Length: 82
Image (cartoon, rainbow, N blue to C red; front, side, top):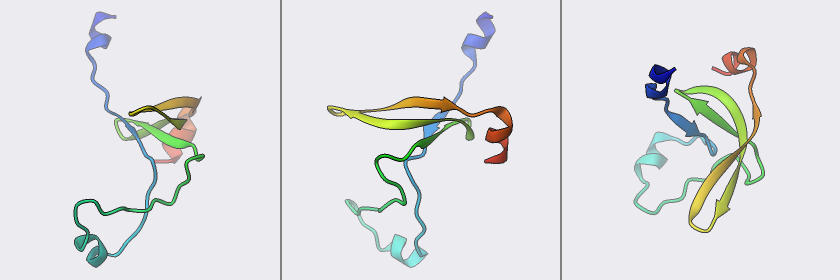
């Protein structure tokens, strides 16, 4: 069991996504705002090594951002979202 404690896993949370033309992206400068196709109440996907494993909700506490896991994805559901 000690060897499993040494395994590294990258965790990512996808807050949203959008599509824009390259010319618009190239004109962006520091401080530009990219509007996402998501709302603050949407569940966000939680990825482990780029594979969806759970859904969660975002919470802000002062200057800290956290994600509360609301449900784990079953393996077939997670694999179909790749």
